[in-house]
Image 1 (cartoon, rainbow, N blue to C red):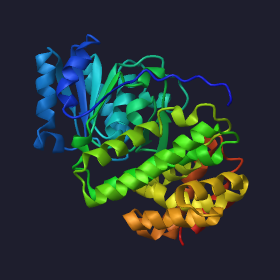
Image 2 (cartoon, rainbow, N blue to C red):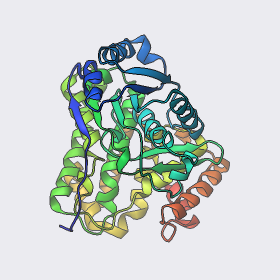
Image 3 (cartoon, helix red, strand yellow):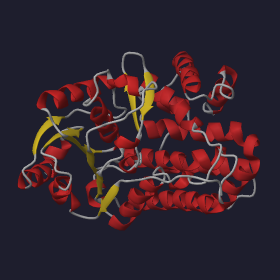
Length: 382
C-alpha cells in the first residue's frame, strides 16, 4: 500500500428524524444566520422545510433562502446565492436537497467570503476560506456530503468544472434514509449509475490498488446493485434505502482512494461534457459512457477488468463483465446509448469539443484526444 494522508472532518448524523436536530448541530458551531439552499418547493410541500425552520428557530438561528437549484447546477445561480449571502450577512450555509444543492452550497460558501468572482476557484485559485457548510441529504448519489468537492456548470461558457479544498468539507451532514423514499424511479437508477462510476474510476484506472480497497469497491458496487433492485420493487424499504445511501457516501469520501496510485476520472471527464452541452442527468450520462469507455480502455488494464468481471458478475473474461454491466443498466432502466439521450451526430460534435477542453483541464489530453473520444462515443451508439 502506498503512503497516503486520509483527512475527512465531516461528521455524519445518520438515522430517522435527525433533520429535526439540525439547529442543535449547527448551534455547536455558534452560527446565527444561515442561507438555506434548496431545489424545488417539494421540501416545503412535504413539510421538511418547516421541520428545519422550527429547529433553527429553537436554536435562535435566523435564515434567508436561495431556492431553485437545478440538477446540473449552474454558475449563475451560485452567483445569485453569493449575492444573497453577502447582502444578508449570513455566517453559514445549509443545503437541503441532493448533490446539486450541496455542490452549489459549497461554491456559495467559498464565494461569500471572497472578493474575486467565485469562478476563479473553479479554474485554479485555491479556496482558503469558506462559510461553515451543513446539509440534509434528500437524495443519495454524489457523495458530496462527505467530501470537499463540488461541480457546477458555467452557463455562459458551458464549462462543467469542479471546486474543492479543505474549507469545503461539510461540518455536519444528515442522512435520513426515510427522506429519500420519495426519490423518483428515474433518479434512483441514475443515482445507482453515479455511485458505481465513483467506485470504478480509481478501481479500473489506477496503476496500483491495495487489495483491501479493491474489496471495498467491489462490495460497494454489489451493495448498490442489490439495493437498487430491492428499491425498484419497494421504495419504502428503509434497510435497503439506508445501505444504498451509505454506499453512495463511501464511494467518494476518500476511503476508495486510500493507498491508490495513478488514478484518473475519465468517465466523469467525458460525461461532464455531455451534461454541460445537453443538460442530461449526470447519472444517465454516466450509464451511457461507462460501458463504452470500459470496452475501449480494458486492454490498458486487463487483469483488473477481468477481476471486475469475476467479482461482480461471476464472468471469466473482461468483455463479458462489461456486457453484464450494460445489461444490468438496461434492466434497471437507465440509458445505455446516445440515442436514448437524444444526442445526434451534430450535438455529439459539440460534446466532443467540450470533452477535449475538459481533457486539457484535467491533464488527460495525452490519452483522450479527438480520435479516442470519437472511438468511445462510437461504442456508445451501439
